[in-house]
Length: 245
Image (cartoon, rainbow, N blue to C red; front, side, top):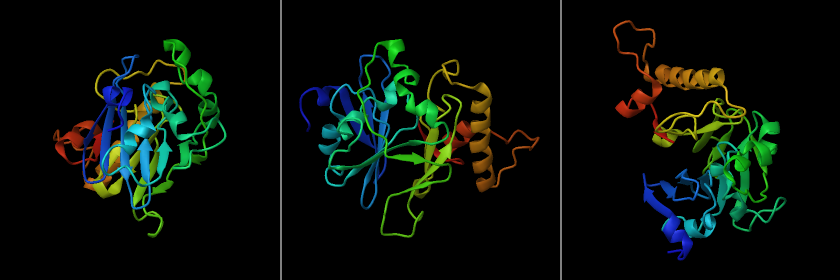
């Protein structure tokens, strides 16, 4: 175990042979979820929470996550998704030895780069420590989980899903039919009134995901017999991807 504060604030469970979820107990009441996806030669860390303890050291203590280098991906730049980034960096211009990179969506880099304002840290009295970003992810990019395989054969597909923020992305793990949605979809009320939020973009993003998996499942969303369902409901029924949010 990592010991100290980390064992008190982080709890982890395994969702599959290659996916773990960590819940953080933080002082802001966010209880963020941090996902790890293990590949052949790297571990992708999806979001880094509120920085209540050293996330990197804690993850190293989990069986199955102790050997491979990390690659961090932020679904967006709100404080409760990026405050642990600094654990994987040496300030704002260098990575730690066991970290391959820190990635963010490229849809609105101006918004992402102004994280001192757009992270909402000032709204809650949080302090996000400086971190580096080494790669800007485009729509359709693949984050490969096996660098020895054909590109895109095993990886996480980047999908632009703005609405909650203009820089929001989702990540699709086709091998498990699982999508990591960040704050596009999550239990409880959805926050679409924050700086940069857009109800119009949110609706477009939900429709985008719904149409994609309706098409793949052979559904007819225009059916008049009541069989058409929302993407979230289809996920619960097993027809759409499993949503990890």
